[in-house]
Length: 291
Image 1 (cartoon, one colour):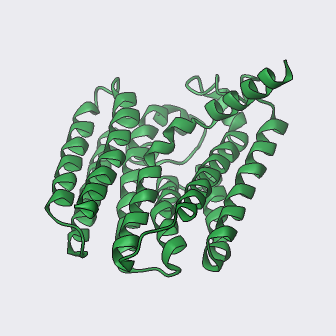
Image 2: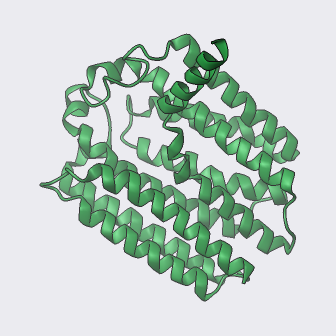
């Protein structure tokens, strides 16, 4: 009976942090692995990939859990989020804190197992992961900070394998930053009125719907440009280029789903399309590197 309860609590905690949304950044972390392998002309070991994946899971899980704790009071007042696990009483703050500390411990241990530079930079990663949860209280740049957090996925994977930083992975990291900031602006549109009422900061609350949509489109155009820059990297060719073109089409369709006078398909644009985008560019990069 205890074992069943344990697994049920684990499932509830994973639901709290929307663990399935790890698909957004996870493929980019693996893409960082591919680029590092191409640059080094050497394959990573199985254990390196395992520790990179565990670091990624620990970072995202801890950040999402911390966000749920810090935003619990705000979530309780927002009709859209009132049924999230902590406001609804499905998860206690104590359970959430234990989960967060365990997740961040996994990140730090994984960084230690990878190389000294990863461990030295892990406090910087923790700083930005924690900062995001407070941003909406004082700046509309929360979307950018979230982009920085997810940009750390491919950059961290590169550092884990090579122990340095190069322009290729910084370009990929910037592409992830603009992609995440763009779709987070779209996601924040649904809380525009609530954010203004509560004096919370976001780009939609500051700019309104139409200008926010324009900025999100501009960010995604920059993402495509940055992805295209990686074509100059040895080992990437026409298959990768085809992947960039497919991603461009997916982004175009994502923005067709969201209109200034109709946000009803926002969930489809956010959850479905962005999952497809990250997996698509990873698959095309992988196939190109293998071919």
